[in-house]
Length: 349
Image (cartoon, rainbow, N blue to C red; front, side, top):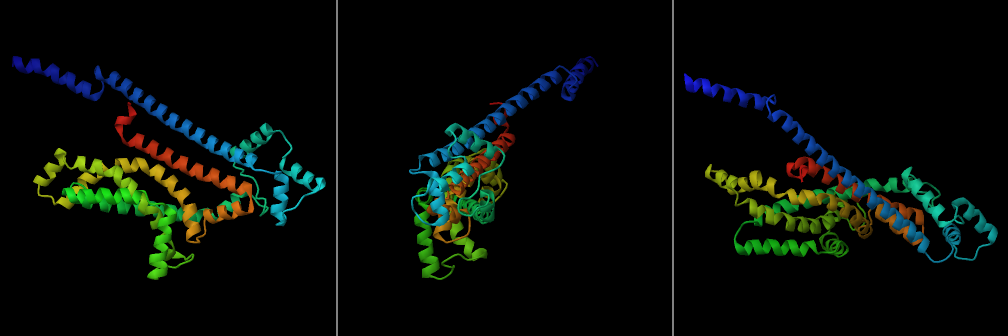
């Protein structure tokens, strides 16, 4: 009876603490508040870094316009008429007034940044319409290529790492060699090789353009193969480390097959590095799509950019640079924030 009566207060105190009404309750509230503050500071830091990167990209695009040789008003008139010739002061005065080219550089820069903050990328010299409309007509095709390439890269990476990681030494060496080789492949070279082999040689895919899956697969593979090699390099070490963990041994003792262990238990722990890289991968794929669209003569921002560069349509060029930088920063920001929310260790670090 005495032991029971002495034990009861202990159990009562533990229960009260578990319910948050004992001494542990305020401490838990303080701890949760501290974690929330750390998380808020991390997210605020990421947002601040994203703003700085976007500002830097926009400033570089503006500086590139200033660095061009010759008179910008003359360039605009020559672009519009398609004739390179000297212009009269009266002709130049109209353009200078329209675009404020005679204003001080600081005024032009502030006007440019202010337009970006309002979502105004300017107007095309050649097409006489807002740059947003010029880019918007083609951005859908670029995003379709980008997300298809990212999905294919994940599939290729998961299959290859699952099949080769943690195997015999020759198989592991082969897996590492293939990942290293593919990660260093230039997209323009790989695209030409795939085009020559599978389009011109075997005739499985259209040579120029093409719609639907047939026209999308080769350009997407051109972007996906190097990306899969890069993400595979980041995932392999984590995969092989996870294979030695106790939960894997426990799963094998329960009779689970090797493939089941790899897919159901090891993979979800090993892909965290690849998830972290997905933001970078998405931005890199958007910028790489510019090259690939040109190789495969696909519609998209790449075609618009090449045309704008050849015709010296500077607002379109700078607008595409800013949009690609924004897509890159946004992708990395979203991945960083989601990763911070998912991984509890980052909330208190």
